[in-house]
Amino acid sequence: MKLTVFSVMTPDMEPEELIDELKQQGFDGVEWRYKEIPAELTKEPISFWGNNKCTLTPEISEEEIKQLKAKSEADQIEVVSVTPYLTSGDLAGTEQVLKVAKAFGASFIRLGVPKYNRSENFHTLFESCKRYLEECEMLCKRYEVKGLIETHHGTIAASASAAYRLVEGLDPDAIGVLFDPGNMVHEGYENHRMGMELLGPYLAHVHLKNAKWIKDSSRNDHQWKVGWELVDEGVVDWVQVMEDLKSVNYEGYIGLEDFSAKKETKEILKYNMDWIKDRE
Image (cartoon, rainbow, N blue to C red; front, side):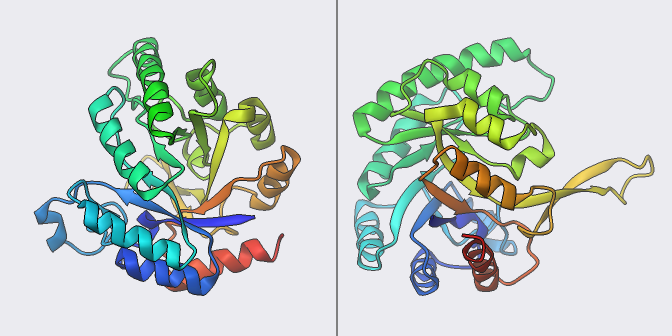
Protein backbone atom coordinates (compact mmCIF):
# COMPACT_ATOMS: atom_id res chain seq x y z
CA MET A 1 0.00 0.00 0.00
CA LYS A 2 1.37 3.41 -1.01
CA LEU A 3 0.88 6.27 1.44
CA THR A 4 0.81 9.98 0.78
CA VAL A 5 -0.01 13.09 2.81
CA PHE A 6 -2.16 16.06 1.77
CA SER A 7 -0.25 19.10 3.03
CA VAL A 8 -3.45 20.79 4.23
CA MET A 9 -3.05 18.63 7.38
CA THR A 10 0.49 19.91 8.10
CA PRO A 11 -0.08 23.68 8.34
CA ASP A 12 2.84 24.35 10.70
CA MET A 13 5.46 22.90 8.33
CA GLU A 14 7.19 24.47 5.34
CA PRO A 15 7.02 22.31 2.17
CA GLU A 16 10.71 21.33 2.36
CA GLU A 17 10.28 20.38 6.01
CA LEU A 18 7.34 18.15 5.16
CA ILE A 19 9.34 16.33 2.49
CA ASP A 20 12.09 15.66 5.04
CA GLU A 21 9.54 14.31 7.50
CA LEU A 22 7.82 12.12 4.93
CA LYS A 23 11.14 10.60 3.94
CA GLN A 24 12.07 9.96 7.57
CA GLN A 25 8.74 8.30 8.37
CA GLY A 26 8.64 6.17 5.23
CA PHE A 27 5.83 7.79 3.24
CA ASP A 28 5.72 7.46 -0.54
CA GLY A 29 4.21 10.71 -1.76
CA VAL A 30 2.82 14.17 -1.12
CA GLU A 31 -0.26 16.09 -2.25
CA TRP A 32 0.37 19.82 -2.31
CA ARG A 33 -2.34 22.18 -1.14
CA TYR A 34 -2.60 24.89 -3.80
CA LYS A 35 -4.38 28.11 -2.89
CA GLU A 36 -4.01 31.86 -2.54
CA ILE A 37 -3.08 33.06 0.96
CA PRO A 38 -4.04 36.74 1.41
CA ALA A 39 -1.56 38.83 3.39
CA GLU A 40 -4.03 39.30 6.24
CA LEU A 41 -4.23 35.53 6.76
CA THR A 42 -0.50 35.29 7.43
CA LYS A 43 -1.05 37.34 10.59
CA GLU A 44 -3.54 34.83 11.99
CA PRO A 45 -2.72 31.67 13.97
CA ILE A 46 -1.60 28.63 11.98
CA SER A 47 -4.62 26.61 10.80
CA PHE A 48 -5.61 23.96 8.28
CA TRP A 49 -7.64 26.19 5.95
CA GLY A 50 -6.30 29.63 6.83
CA ASN A 51 -2.68 30.48 7.57
CA ASN A 52 -1.27 27.21 6.27
CA LYS A 53 2.51 27.33 5.74
CA CYS A 54 2.50 24.10 3.71
CA THR A 55 0.52 25.65 0.85
CA LEU A 56 1.78 26.36 -2.65
CA THR A 57 0.30 29.58 -3.98
CA PRO A 58 -0.40 30.56 -7.61
CA GLU A 59 2.54 32.97 -7.33
CA ILE A 60 4.99 30.04 -7.20
CA SER A 61 7.74 30.54 -9.78
CA GLU A 62 9.13 28.03 -12.26
CA GLU A 63 12.41 28.04 -10.35
CA GLU A 64 10.64 27.32 -7.04
CA ILE A 65 8.79 24.43 -8.69
CA LYS A 66 12.06 23.03 -10.05
CA GLN A 67 13.73 23.24 -6.65
CA LEU A 68 10.85 21.62 -4.77
CA LYS A 69 10.47 18.93 -7.44
CA ALA A 70 14.20 18.19 -7.30
CA LYS A 71 14.07 17.82 -3.52
CA SER A 72 11.06 15.50 -3.76
CA GLU A 73 12.81 13.35 -6.34
CA ALA A 74 16.05 13.24 -4.35
CA ASP A 75 14.12 12.06 -1.29
CA GLN A 76 12.00 9.65 -3.37
CA ILE A 77 8.74 11.37 -2.44
CA GLU A 78 6.38 11.38 -5.42
CA VAL A 79 4.31 14.50 -6.05
CA VAL A 80 0.97 12.73 -6.39
CA SER A 81 -1.30 15.75 -6.68
CA VAL A 82 -1.52 19.50 -6.87
CA THR A 83 -4.80 20.05 -5.05
CA PRO A 84 -6.60 23.38 -5.54
CA TYR A 85 -10.01 24.71 -4.56
CA LEU A 86 -11.42 25.29 -8.03
CA THR A 87 -14.89 26.54 -8.89
CA SER A 88 -16.88 24.40 -11.29
CA GLY A 89 -16.79 26.08 -14.69
CA ASP A 90 -13.48 27.87 -14.17
CA LEU A 91 -11.61 26.44 -17.15
CA ALA A 92 -8.90 29.10 -17.11
CA GLY A 93 -8.15 28.37 -13.47
CA THR A 94 -8.25 24.64 -14.14
CA GLU A 95 -5.73 24.93 -16.95
CA GLN A 96 -3.43 27.04 -14.79
CA VAL A 97 -3.39 24.30 -12.12
CA LEU A 98 -2.81 21.64 -14.77
CA LYS A 99 0.27 23.54 -15.94
CA VAL A 100 1.68 23.55 -12.40
CA ALA A 101 0.84 19.86 -11.92
CA LYS A 102 2.53 19.02 -15.22
CA ALA A 103 5.65 20.91 -14.14
CA PHE A 104 5.77 18.86 -10.93
CA GLY A 105 5.11 15.60 -12.75
CA ALA A 106 1.98 15.11 -10.63
CA SER A 107 -0.62 12.47 -11.44
CA PHE A 108 -3.74 14.38 -10.34
CA ILE A 109 -5.41 17.68 -9.73
CA ARG A 110 -8.76 18.21 -7.98
CA LEU A 111 -11.53 19.68 -10.13
CA GLY A 112 -14.35 21.97 -9.06
CA VAL A 113 -17.81 20.69 -8.13
CA PRO A 114 -20.76 23.00 -7.38
CA LYS A 115 -21.79 23.50 -3.78
CA TYR A 116 -25.40 22.72 -2.93
CA ASN A 117 -27.05 25.16 -0.49
CA ARG A 118 -30.68 25.19 -1.66
CA SER A 119 -30.17 28.43 -3.61
CA GLU A 120 -30.08 26.77 -7.03
CA ASN A 121 -31.79 23.70 -8.46
CA PHE A 122 -29.73 20.51 -8.48
CA HIS A 123 -30.40 19.79 -12.16
CA THR A 124 -29.09 23.20 -13.19
CA LEU A 125 -25.92 22.66 -11.15
CA PHE A 126 -25.52 19.12 -12.47
CA GLU A 127 -25.80 20.08 -16.13
CA SER A 128 -23.33 22.97 -15.79
CA CYS A 129 -20.84 20.76 -13.95
CA LYS A 130 -21.18 18.00 -16.53
CA ARG A 131 -20.31 20.49 -19.29
CA TYR A 132 -17.32 21.69 -17.26
CA LEU A 133 -16.05 18.14 -16.74
CA GLU A 134 -16.37 17.41 -20.46
CA GLU A 135 -14.12 20.40 -21.13
CA CYS A 136 -11.77 19.28 -18.34
CA GLU A 137 -11.52 15.86 -19.97
CA MET A 138 -9.91 17.43 -23.01
CA LEU A 139 -7.62 19.63 -20.93
CA CYS A 140 -6.51 16.73 -18.76
CA LYS A 141 -5.67 14.66 -21.82
CA ARG A 142 -3.64 17.55 -23.23
CA TYR A 143 -1.59 17.94 -20.05
CA GLU A 144 -1.54 14.21 -19.23
CA VAL A 145 -2.75 14.86 -15.68
CA LYS A 146 -5.93 13.22 -14.39
CA GLY A 147 -8.66 15.45 -12.96
CA LEU A 148 -10.51 14.19 -9.90
CA ILE A 149 -13.79 15.12 -8.29
CA GLU A 150 -13.99 14.44 -4.56
CA THR A 151 -16.86 12.90 -2.63
CA HIS A 152 -17.45 15.93 -0.44
CA HIS A 153 -20.26 17.10 1.81
CA GLY A 154 -22.03 20.29 0.80
CA THR A 155 -21.60 19.59 -2.91
CA ILE A 156 -23.55 17.77 -5.59
CA ALA A 157 -21.01 14.92 -5.31
CA ALA A 158 -21.47 14.03 -1.65
CA SER A 159 -21.76 10.28 -2.31
CA ALA A 160 -20.10 7.75 -4.58
CA SER A 161 -23.26 7.37 -6.66
CA ALA A 162 -23.62 11.15 -7.05
CA ALA A 163 -19.98 11.41 -8.11
CA TYR A 164 -20.49 8.55 -10.55
CA ARG A 165 -23.35 10.36 -12.26
CA LEU A 166 -21.02 13.29 -12.93
CA VAL A 167 -18.14 11.26 -14.37
CA GLU A 168 -20.19 8.58 -16.16
CA GLY A 169 -19.35 8.47 -19.86
CA LEU A 170 -16.08 10.36 -19.47
CA ASP A 171 -12.70 8.75 -20.08
CA PRO A 172 -11.51 7.23 -16.76
CA ASP A 173 -7.93 7.74 -17.91
CA ALA A 174 -8.56 11.48 -17.80
CA ILE A 175 -11.30 11.97 -15.17
CA GLY A 176 -11.75 10.09 -11.89
CA VAL A 177 -13.08 10.21 -8.36
CA LEU A 178 -11.30 10.89 -5.08
CA PHE A 179 -13.13 8.61 -2.62
CA ASP A 180 -13.31 10.16 0.87
CA PRO A 181 -15.25 8.12 3.48
CA GLY A 182 -14.51 10.72 6.20
CA ASN A 183 -16.40 13.37 4.25
CA MET A 184 -19.30 10.96 3.90
CA VAL A 185 -19.81 10.98 7.68
CA HIS A 186 -21.11 14.53 7.16
CA GLU A 187 -23.24 13.62 4.17
CA GLY A 188 -23.42 11.00 1.45
CA TYR A 189 -22.82 7.71 3.26
CA GLU A 190 -23.37 4.56 1.22
CA ASN A 191 -21.97 1.11 1.76
CA HIS A 192 -18.34 1.76 0.89
CA ARG A 193 -17.74 -1.43 -1.04
CA MET A 194 -20.86 -0.82 -3.10
CA GLY A 195 -19.61 2.68 -3.89
CA MET A 196 -16.21 1.35 -4.93
CA GLU A 197 -17.80 -1.27 -7.15
CA LEU A 198 -20.03 1.37 -8.74
CA LEU A 199 -17.10 3.70 -9.44
CA GLY A 200 -15.08 0.93 -11.03
CA PRO A 201 -12.29 2.42 -13.17
CA TYR A 202 -13.16 5.93 -11.95
CA LEU A 203 -11.89 5.08 -8.43
CA ALA A 204 -8.59 6.95 -8.70
CA HIS A 205 -7.55 8.04 -5.20
CA VAL A 206 -8.61 7.64 -1.55
CA HIS A 207 -8.35 10.02 1.41
CA LEU A 208 -8.05 8.65 4.92
CA LYS A 209 -9.54 10.60 7.81
CA ASN A 210 -12.35 10.06 10.31
CA ALA A 211 -15.19 11.92 11.96
CA LYS A 212 -18.18 11.44 14.25
CA TRP A 213 -21.48 13.07 15.12
CA ILE A 214 -21.56 15.12 18.34
CA LYS A 215 -24.13 17.30 20.10
CA ASP A 216 -23.71 20.99 19.27
CA SER A 217 -23.41 22.56 22.74
CA SER A 218 -23.65 26.05 21.26
CA ARG A 219 -27.30 25.47 20.40
CA ASN A 220 -30.34 25.00 22.61
CA ASP A 221 -32.33 22.84 20.20
CA HIS A 222 -30.15 19.71 20.60
CA GLN A 223 -28.86 19.79 17.04
CA TRP A 224 -25.92 17.65 15.97
CA LYS A 225 -22.73 18.45 14.10
CA VAL A 226 -19.77 16.49 12.77
CA GLY A 227 -16.36 16.72 14.42
CA TRP A 228 -13.10 15.34 13.04
CA GLU A 229 -11.56 12.37 14.85
CA LEU A 230 -8.53 10.10 14.91
CA VAL A 231 -8.55 7.32 12.33
CA ASP A 232 -9.56 4.67 14.89
CA GLU A 233 -12.02 6.77 16.92
CA GLY A 234 -14.56 7.96 14.36
CA VAL A 235 -17.61 6.54 12.62
CA VAL A 236 -15.80 5.15 9.56
CA ASP A 237 -14.75 1.53 10.01
CA TRP A 238 -11.40 1.86 8.28
CA VAL A 239 -10.55 -1.79 8.81
CA GLN A 240 -13.58 -2.64 6.69
CA VAL A 241 -12.79 0.10 4.16
CA MET A 242 -9.28 -1.31 3.70
CA GLU A 243 -10.76 -4.76 3.10
CA ASP A 244 -13.22 -3.28 0.63
CA LEU A 245 -10.39 -1.58 -1.28
CA LYS A 246 -8.59 -4.91 -1.54
CA SER A 247 -11.78 -6.59 -2.74
CA VAL A 248 -11.98 -4.23 -5.74
CA ASN A 249 -8.23 -4.60 -6.40
CA TYR A 250 -7.47 -0.96 -5.64
CA GLU A 251 -3.74 -0.37 -6.09
CA GLY A 252 -3.54 3.42 -5.84
CA TYR A 253 -2.47 5.73 -3.05
CA ILE A 254 -4.06 6.20 0.36
CA GLY A 255 -3.72 9.88 1.22
CA LEU A 256 -3.73 11.02 4.85
CA GLU A 257 -5.92 14.03 5.63
CA ASP A 258 -6.25 13.96 9.43
CA PHE A 259 -8.02 17.03 10.88
CA SER A 260 -8.50 15.68 14.43
CA ALA A 261 -5.89 18.11 15.85
CA LYS A 262 -5.46 15.73 18.80
CA LYS A 263 -1.70 15.37 18.38
CA GLU A 264 1.24 17.40 17.14
CA THR A 265 1.79 17.23 13.38
CA LYS A 266 4.76 14.84 13.33
CA GLU A 267 3.08 12.66 15.92
CA ILE A 268 -0.19 12.47 13.99
CA LEU A 269 1.69 11.44 10.85
CA LYS A 270 3.36 8.63 12.75
CA TYR A 271 0.09 7.65 14.46
CA ASN A 272 -1.66 7.17 11.11
CA MET A 273 1.34 5.46 9.54
CA ASP A 274 1.59 2.98 12.43
CA TRP A 275 -2.16 2.31 12.39
CA ILE A 276 -2.11 1.50 8.67
CA LYS A 277 1.03 -0.64 8.83
CA ASP A 278 -0.38 -2.66 11.74
CA ARG A 279 -3.32 -3.65 9.54
CA GLU A 280 -1.60 -4.49 6.29
